Image (cartoon, rainbow, N blue to C red; front, side):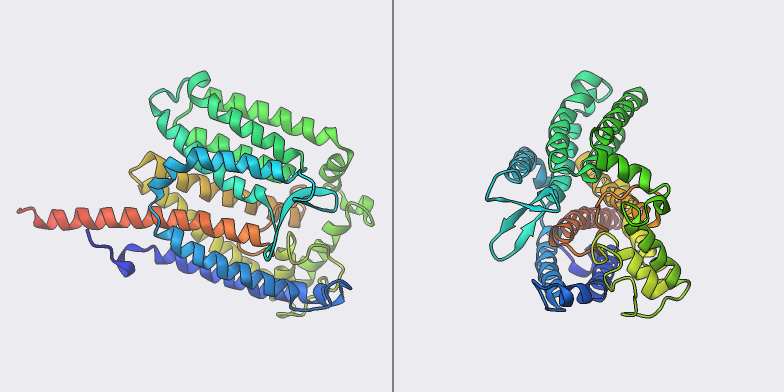
Length: 384
């Protein structure tokens, strides 16, 4: 059946993504220009926004391509995707290739593009891999040793490689999505409870294995006990949110971005949004996220292909988990894990991967709409 560009695309999803990411560009510039101007190595107020606009342009082109690329083809690429994911995580630790920031080895330097964060791409790779494997195992997904467990061994390897960086937030989000995909694949509840118990034990082990992780876990419960140490960033976030109030101080009028709030343009950009645009600005962000995630879940539910359904669910819930982790950190409800806010935080890797993932969801939706349109035309041709 002939493809209709205007009728078959999910414009609610597409417009919301573009609207939120364009808003993100505006807020990245507002939150970063003071830092960029005062940094002795940069001294260019447009440094961060120029790079983010470059990544936005690249991500938009990739989005257009992926949105029209048949999602079913990813089934053939799943093994390649997971192997490349592991290789990228290994390259992070290679001297001369890996790039270290503040003691964390999470990046690879690319000529002309700066640095990329492989773990962001791995999030999507794991979803594609699990969606394919669990689709193949539908006939015996209720059996733990042969159905549920084998692909999770690969996820465990990836979890370990990411923990070597170290990046507990990203590793934890990947494990949660893996368990959710097992659930949506039809795994038994007792198997899932067992996995959750093992995951909880691993989480506690890794938290207690490093003093700085324990400090992060405990400092968010009472940041004022260490107001000039581990609690400093969260306190500055509180000040930004309180300063913004209902309507905000006005676009560009944040005080906390004047080098008071660390990572104001990345992990804590929501605090700057709250300060400059108030509760209304934050509400706009949450409404956009709600639309995107809701559309993703609906698209997954309506998809006739188990692989497509798992892809849509996995991408949507990975996005939701990142939002929960970031908002929880900014508001002091969860420990600070360094997870960026999708489509809003400064960072090329996060923006590009978010666009690719959502483009896959848009392609699944396009396929759903076309099938529904074809069914409607066939129904009209059948005589009453």
